[in-house]
Amino acid sequence: MLIRAILIVLSFSLIFAQLPVIKIISPMESDPIIAYDEINIYGELIDSDKLFVNNYNVDLQNGLFRLKFKFSETGYREFAFRAENENGKTEKVLKVDVLKTYPDIEKSPYKREIEIISTLQLMPSYMGTDFFKPDNYVRKAELTRILLLLQGIAPTTKYKTNFFYRDLLQTHWAYHYIQLALNHNLIYPLNAVEFAPDKIITREEVLRILKNFYGNLKEESRAYYRDILVDDNEHRTIAYLAAQGYLPPDWIKEDSFYPLKPVKREELAYLLSRLDHMDKRIKDDYLLEQQRFRKNPLQSESDTTFVLSFKEITENIYVVECNPERNKQTLFIELQLQSEAEVIKILLVDDGRNIDLLKDDNIYSGLINFQNYKEGTYSYLYKLFDEYNLIYQVGDGELQYARGLITLD
Image (tube, rainbow, N blue to C red; front, top):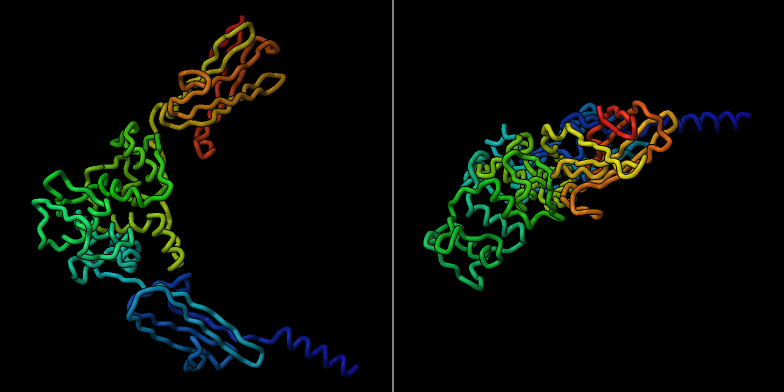
């Protein structure tokens, strides 16, 4: 009995045995923690007097510890904490991203994007200073250098063809970058005699130049901006980028795109950070998830108008016709007609691009037989779906069926 009692006591002791607890007081733990030139880690160790960081012993004062690390290089790193006592050991890993930053970007809405792109060495400080100048406009020569880095082309003074333009002097700081980019068809001159290295890049131009760096790029035929033409291929590409969240939030929240508006350095940093292969690199190498802000299509009066008609084909047989607005890409329209006996569902389809497999217009039709319907008033419900198969409009109404004719209220 005594042995059994001792075993029970030991069992309870093991159950309630305390492992060491490592508490990080500062900085606030996140995954990962963002740091710059240095990091100060404050913490507390409970139920142990032995603490190691990356296998180095840490001095404790009344269970508290303070660590300071200085960084000479940017990048991702880990700090492995380990504490021990007679009951076992506890381990904790702090993941830290050391980023490049500047004193003049604190108020920029794209501060994090600037830090990431600078850390990746795509965009350096402004003219070798300690500042980024986020509101300065991007010029063609600067963008040319970035294109080479995106393509993984090492700077060199050797290239196959030497292009001559009257405004491109060998003394220009980007002369060899421009020659390289021209040899690799990454950039184009202004005309036959001018390259315009100091030309300020517009919104429409920067997206045209970066076009090849987006994966699976498509065209969006719905209207997302009032000043973007839905019958222009390049403009439909801009609409797609807006719909998929590739563009800066300041460009997303406006109903006009302003294609001729100059691009700021901070905006270019945002665009670069959302390029598909750059976004993947940021996730893989820095464990940073970047939010995307998707733009909704513009709403117009026609968006709230559902054109529905019933046309008699033979006795008691009607064709249901729907004319969705072009460029809205209404793909599915589900019509539900309610009678006393049943609910009849008719599926209408329109791709919004004037493509029709049945006839040479953009109308798909459904047939409905009123043979078993009595004359009177009937209610109907319709649901409109977008190309993502999500409902974006629902409505209802009534129709009158009398003397073989249908009228809508």
